[in-house]
Figure (cartoon, one colour):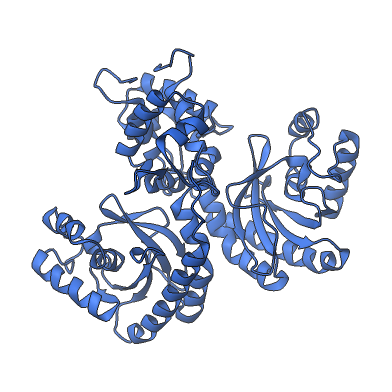
Length: 257
Length: 257
């Protein structure tokens, strides 16, 4: 179907084009876009024209390109991320009012942690865990919590894969990670300093969905130093409980075509 | 390029598939999806397989399909909507704390109003203006404000198009709309009851971007009855001013490929 000479589908090439846009580089020229997407200029040109026609890419008055509102709309309308964050937002505000640090909501997706919401603290200098960014599972508190409550098969897949040394303190030894996962399930939270970003401690708790499985993780990122942890955990546990209750209440009645 | 026998491109068919998901129907079977997208089952099957491969659609354990996290991520990363709502969110919270009603942020896109953020009030029974939903420009306070500060050519295009009678009070007479637009520019806000949803009054003010053009509109939806309006307008104007200031501060330094 619609494959290039290399056998790559149109959908695959569109994904490469749309992936080229990010928060640090939201607009670029056609040739810049082609280069970042690794596509020949003529191929990029043809696809971009069609994407502009459908509003998935916007052409600015100066000729530069950026991701289109229609792309955001298409993705947002039926999205699990949107429902999660809509339900979770008031509870995240409660946490931030108590904790005064970045507060994030993340899910497990395609073998990594994906941040679906963040309330930023103006007091925090941390430049990480942005919305729609990803982190390796083993190198973030959010990932470890999500993994701790995942099925054993999921855990083994992650632990048998490549475990990148993100900081000097990232735990990359599968046996040691297993020990942490057991401890997380016993205590109900995680707080290991410096595994994702040196000088910061992510404190994360699970959020359970209506089916009883872990649906997301709620996380506050505090400056390194244990003092903040005992105060932050109860705030997170309280809010996570509230989100789980609200998710249950918001679960749509079964209606399917 | 990759056109079907009808001449429709792969991108166009993918847009039809992704459009089939929405907040009221987030999951469906393959045949339900094909039907809603208006595509032959074999075509839908082939495209969906490729979309699942790239994570743009997810296959649930029961075989049903839903919009994928990767789709949301692709759209969110470089999105103008995401930057706008990140900047605006604290100010929207301020408004909601003062007004206790649905508070929305919307932009003009492809000739309609698109809601990019909403803080919902638990006290409000209104079921409209959801995130990623659209409204006709002339039938919403948000749309009238955005139109009032748009270029004359944009205004004329909207006013010469079809002006649907959404409620008995929707204004569909171009000359009367022009009068309202002039009044909005003079007063700096709009509050016309019942034009989009009977029994509700949208109160909207413009949010200006760093380039001086209208970037969005901030809107509170209050039960019909003039009492709330004088109290709501100053709250919206204050917050819109704060968002404009924050947008200016957050405007990225030019960096382009």
